Length: 111
Image (cartoon, rainbow, N blue to C red):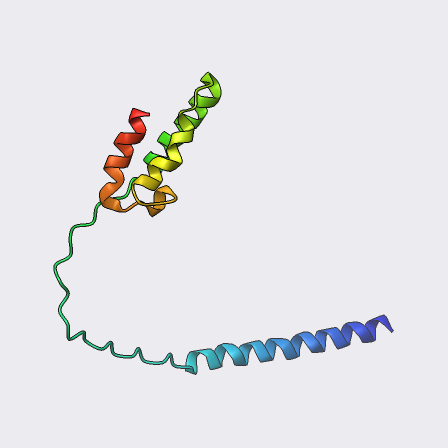
């Protein structure tokens, strides 16, 4: 009984090995589709303004420092953070336009 089951399993393994071998051979025959040619843009790109690197992380760190100092010293400076961010055009630091980030950073440092 056990020997019969072992023989059946060995035959199943042999069948699977043959199928795997066929798949590997077929894989070599399958060609990848040729890449589609990209359409050339007719409109020339306008000269873009140089991108200013956003320092959201620095501003967020300043805000965290203010909040932590408030908890430590019992001051109420943290209440002014959200209105200040809103004044510079956003509900969150990431919403503030890039050109206003330097002004926001300076204003936060004054708090």
